[in-house]
Length: 362
Image (tube, rainbow, N blue to C red):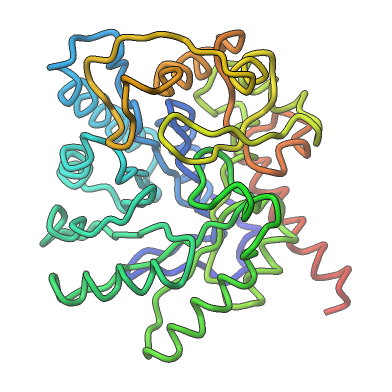
C-alpha cells in the first residue's frame, strides 16, 4: 500500500476507505481486468474490472453469450481477489444486454463496488438487495443524479452509496452531444458545483467522485479542494506494466499526439473519443465492415444498420490488432509518455498532489 498517500483525505464509502482517494476506471473491452485491478487495490486505491465483453463471447454461439460472460467475470473477480486484499469493484454498463446477469454474478462474488453508467441503473438496487456491495451510478448532470435518487428512494428506500460525475473529457462512449464535448459544456467544475448544491439542499452527504480527463495529482487536489470526495482515473492506468491489454494498445497511447485525439459516432448511437489511426479515418469516411451478429451485446445497437461491430473492434484492439480497430482514450492521452508499474504511477500522482500544494503556496 502507498504510505505517501497518508496526508490526503481518504475516500470513505460506508465502511470502505480508499486512500489515496482514487478509483481506477473500468475500461472495456478487456482493457482493465484482474491483473490491473488487483495491483491498484494493493496500493490502497479501488481497482475496477470492466465487465463489457468480459468473456470472448464473439467466438461462441449466440445462446452461450450470457454464460460465457458470467463465467469470465467470475474468474476475473476471483483472480483479482487471489492477488489482492484491497478494494475490488466492477463497472457494468446499463446498456449491456446481459446487465442483470453480470450484476448478479458480481454480487454473488461479493465485490466491494458496482459502478454503473451508460444508461440509468434504475433497478440496480433490486439486484443487489441485502448485500454489502456499494452501488455507485455514473451521471453526467445533476438532473440525471436527481432522477436516480428519487427512483431509488421511492422504490427501494435507499440512495446511492456514492456517485461518479463524468465530464466531457473522458475516453470511450460519452453521455454528451458532440457539440457539448467540443465546447466542454457543461464543464466538470460546473457539474460538481451543481451536484454539491443539490446535495446541500437535500441534506445529503453522499461522496461525489469526479471523472473525465483527471490525469494527475494536481487535478486531483483541484477537485478535492472544490468538494469532491475522490477521483476516478482511467487513461493513465493503461500505461502500466500490469494493465491487461496488448503492448500495441499501450504503444498507441504513448505515440498519441493532441492532434490524434478525435471523436467518432459509435454504432451504439453515442459519441466516442478515440485515438486516430487508419481504421478510424476509414470509418469517418463511411467505411462499412459487414458482420453477422448472433448475440447483440448492447441494447442500443442495431446489427442490421451498424456500419461495423463495436464489440469486435474493441476486442481486436485489446489484442493489439489496431489495423482493424481503434483504442478508446481520454482527452489527456497525449500526456502519456512512459510505461511504469501501478505502484510507481500512484506514487507519482501523490507526489504531483503534494507539488501542486507547494506550488500554490498553501
